[in-house]
Length: 133
Ligand code: ZN
Image (cartoon, rainbow, N blue to C red):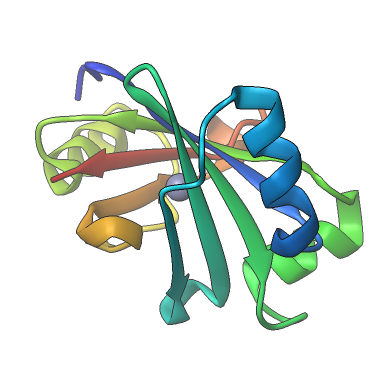
């Protein structure tokens, strides 16, 4: 389960059209990919900072996870993703260590990555994602 690095930080935003130019300016780099992830009811936009990405998340459905997050908390950091060798194995290890999971096995996320989430109730309040190629 030992992560190699922070793969990305997920930031919930109201509107990609406004937030992409802001982050391009802040980071001094262009957004290199915009992609809809239907399964999660989001549109994502990616920036690369070193080997870590910033993932902006715009909701496509108010009842989806980002739609609900924005309604409850407003814009801000939504999750942190660790790169691991194998996301499904990392989830299984986390579960056997007593952590609560959102995903028992990994599923396909943006950029073709295998992803799965731990429940924030067992991670001191942070939504943590494991991510593998
Ligand atoms: Zn993510």
